[in-house]
Length: 228
Image (cartoon, rainbow, N blue to C red; front, side, top):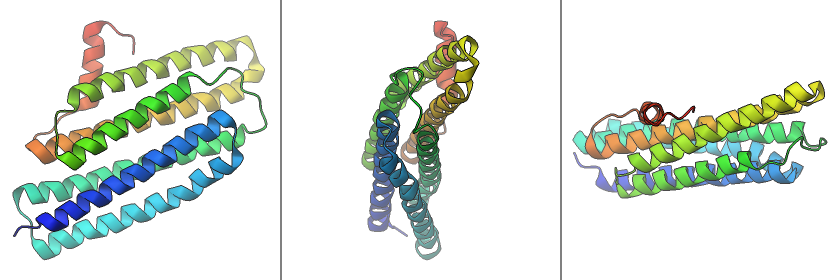
């Protein structure tokens, strides 16, 4: 039984959720860069909206399966939506964690200018924009771009790790803040991983084949001799 109108509506709702996640991530990194307590608090509240959207979309997916008994591509589209909203919800959790780190550091001057962490966040936002467009359009030609951006995110994380390690070794008083900043970079690295998961599901939805983009990125690093 065809469920095309309902599938299109479902995809629109998933994109809407993804757009909210993107906005929350932007707020979270701006709050960190500007030491904006009000904005960080907004991010924490917004995570509840993301959770509510996940539950609503999940229920819609189950209703479509029960009422429409979809076959083939329609069923893949529903399975894809169910997987994507999980990754989006977890990205919202990571954004909330970034906001909590901001709040913890609100009264401390940063031990170093925030350059690479916002750069990581910008890459994550670009990745999310690209993968949401691909999902909406049913375009699976995103793998190479995602691999490239994933490698850039990983390289930035490695760079941040090395720099913060030096700060910790130079002065023990830097350890607590440096650890929190490293956690922030780790949350962004995980966000990028969730985005590649979404990319994999887009390929599955369109072509019916499964990929491991993170593994492909690691293999590309190994082939190029990159330390990341």
